[in-house]
Length: 298
Length: 307
Image (cartoon, rainbow over all chains, first blue to last red; front, side, top):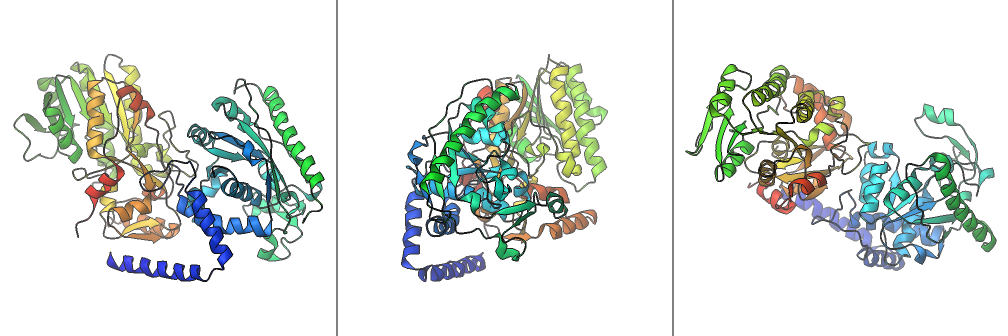
């Protein structure tokens, strides 16, 4: 017992030492994150966890590198984030760029720019919870397996859930399809109807160019057990380095909240009509963003 | 509930319930092992639930309510005996209940019957399929007990039957699998995983059973405690030291050592240390007015090692 405590003490000292050598602006950002994260409205138990494994200390530690990416690499800007209502809400966004940096940046925006700061809960593929370490990291930062039941119980708890209805099909879309929304899943709209949740359409401009893909060798991907095998500017030619995204500028546009009424078990055609309203709102954000920007990197 | 018969009365939870019920009603019990120091008001019959003498107990005692918790939940005595006692014992108890006019039956199942899987949603309700046999065949007898008890509710509407599926039970009386696991000198965990675990205090479970009897609730219910924490927090809160083992290694070791009889936990339990089994107890709270009273901190304090 005592040995463990000493070990922990040593680790803490090491961490503090490393921490002391961080430049002042990094420490400032960490302090800002710490101050903001205490204002997150999510209710935690006496051990500082929520029922799904979220822990705000872990979230803060994960948020620091993401906030650095957000501010200094992608130089992200958000527009109309005040449109996100308090309480239960679904953020519906486009998905692109081979790796889910768009999701991470959207979550970072909700933490750094929203008032009060929110933890945007990610809906992960179920195999994420099979991966060691990654599954724990996902749970501690507020993500969980994207089953309809999980989504409903999060919304019932008044949380902010982000969904990318294009799924893997959007994330691995080819460069020539940038800013074209791929097939949308309908599940999110049924859930919104069932739980009477407002939908905020989110248009992320920038992520669609972060990792231009020229082909997707799905069959080869399946051999490696991956959902896709993209050929991009960097991957697989540059190896692990090739998965890094280009330093594009991120612009995140939040649309007016949309409220839908209807039967959640309606046939696909009538649900699709409502989904098209959401898609149109995301497309309007694209138009605005593409007009506003001077270039991919500016 | 004029007279309650408790099967498995000599176990920790059984003793606790017997003492609690003896304050309000007449209590008797059956168990294969004796209970030294049972109070004067509590008659304990030493019988095997599968034998004819147990039927005699039910016939002569004529209980109005039966609480069935006489199960073998460990693996020390072999799978066949365990299966026979749990499944055939339950079936015969049900026959006796029908034959001798028992009005109420409470069966103590467990949350393990749902099975631990990566794709499990959080806060599963009672209608979720019971898939434990898929990854943990050693406890398929408990799944079967739960299933026959649940169908008994509809087969015999004249008996008010209640199946309770409590989450991990901790306390100083019970000898649950999870309690003995947390009492190991080094607690093996699965490296890279830290699922959320739900706990209930033995006292709260006791009250839940009393409520089920008093309110005569029918149906299948999850019974949850005050909340959930990660496995590693649990281990450190009870003052133990976790010993993370890579999953394939743990599987192999558990499997071999269990087969050789050196280790009490089959490899199937590893899934419960890897993936969450998270239950919603809303239905029981609503229908029985149940409310857990013992906090997580108090539960862990009671389990804390003294050395």
